[in-house]
Image (cartoon, rainbow, N blue to C red; front, side, top):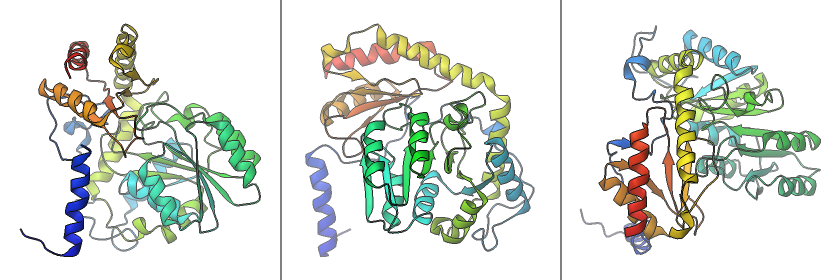
Length: 381
């Protein structure tokens, strides 16, 4: 297909620039040994468990939830989600991305001051942009003192602080207790994205907020279902007023066709598993412990690399160069180990890395193979 418009020539130029820096993204099918997906508990691959019948007996939602997509069963599911997470109310969105952009844009206006951790997900940043706020500032990652300074600078304003419970590229955990104390002192709204904490942290996988007993101190919580829960969608938790604001002002909620009934059924079944499947979480944390033990056995600095400090399923090996990170990942993939490189601009330049995701189903033999092959890759690439 030959395109000659000025805009299409701009597309070609932008892609060429990505090629020159080895940063052009491409779609790749998975290889056999999974060290890249967010299916931490292995539920996404258990179709026999999550695929259940839904009472409505139809496939399509037929419209947005404000039109024809609403049902009593969804109401019941949202009440159940709110009760599980010890929140007054819940509202289901079609995805975590929709929930993040739709929530941050709807709850604020151009006068709201946003203070966000510099490692927050792109969807949170996009939500702040869509709010049209003129006052969006980032604080250094997990730096409570820096956040305190920013809060003091804007003490006379309406402030929203945005953090994640577990950060998706570094795998570390937010210092939530300290952040809660600060936001209370300044009457700031606190938004916590629990995308990578859901299903992983807490006795029942309820997330970091409840694990720390802070659920009554957080204004907005967002739980995503496309990761450890093994299905699709997300829920926003908070006050009844918050949910009504989202129903009235959140554009991704108002103008999107609702999820198909089968998706709500899968979410419901995933909450059954959170209650009942303690074994998968125990196995997952056993795999994490075994992985970290292997890291401690070697000197990674001799390869010019270093591991991020993480006790979650997300483990990062900092390589620091785009091409080298690609080469190592390609070597691992050629040995059927599905590890993906994370490059700038997704992460800061100079922190390019391998992002290794661990799962309850990863075996000791797979971990042995991963570390053996990784050492070979570092020695030869």
